[in-house]
Image (cartoon, rainbow, N blue to C red; front, side):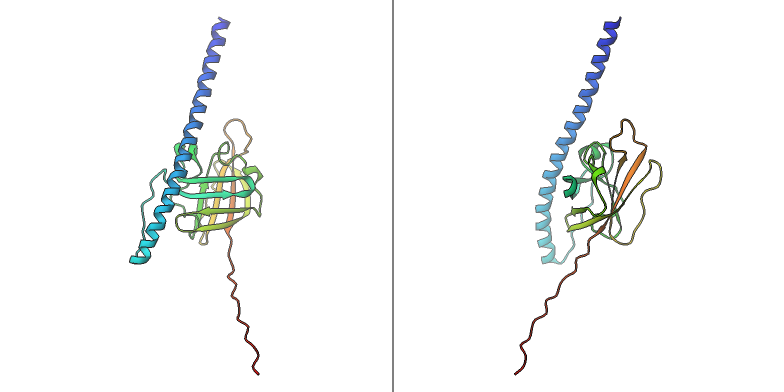
Length: 207
């Protein structure tokens, strides 16, 4: 009887490991596919931009769930990931997800990106105020600086509307927690404003 119970536990454990490994493999494959799609979209955008300048039109395509919409880079924690549209299981298994209905990175409003704490945001506990973040979209590359981080209850409201460009990154908290995490980490970043320097021409003194 004990042998049968032990065998059952071994088989069950093996199945669970196989399932988890399969999920991670599918996520990695989808992440590679998303990066390939992102590179192709960037090339397509360059052509579309050239045509829009020539025709004086603004191209606009509907964003499908699962489509790559941005690239997210955080040098301090070594993150370089393609952001997909949507925050369902398949999207978050492959990469960070852009919350539908929130602004896109760099546009006016609050852009919200979420990811699993045991996947792409696994080093978010090392993120600090003052760290830099870069987002790349089809329209532009935007630099951000982390201005706040806070931990809230899992069911507490976390999203808010803003008039200026804001980037909100979220994940479950604590990062190193076994089981369902009871809280969420909210990281807020503001766009870095670049000051364009105007060089004044020096005029030679009149004779």
